[in-house]
Length: 156
Image 1 (cartoon, one colour):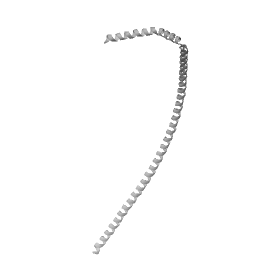
Image 2 (cartoon, one colour):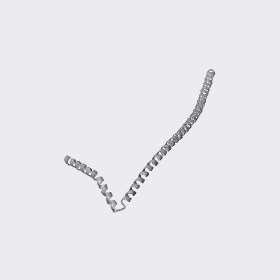
Image 3 (cartoon, helix red, strand yellow):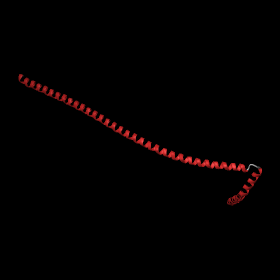
Image 4 (tube, helix red, strand yellow):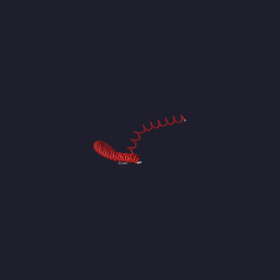
């Protein structure tokens, strides 16, 4: 029996050593995996931080450029609107002056007419002259109206 005991002990020792080596290999493999995961997380974190930093720089730069462009456009628009407003104001002033001059002339005509029609004799003469001057025009309009009316009646 002692002859078989030695190989059995030797086999037991070899199996124990082999199990120890396998166990150490598993622990070492887990440590390597954990270390790789830690490095991967550090790399991803630093890359994410760098990407965020670059994105923020780009956003800030674009925002500043857009703000500068918007201010430039607003200033140009303001200048154009001011120019249009000035031109419009000048044109309105000119039109207002023209209308005021025409109104003043009409008021002068009314005042002249009022002076001319101050007495009943002058009023009578004014209306007689007006009717005499307008009579041919009224007759022409009347005949044209009758002709149009007869044309319409004949179409019905």
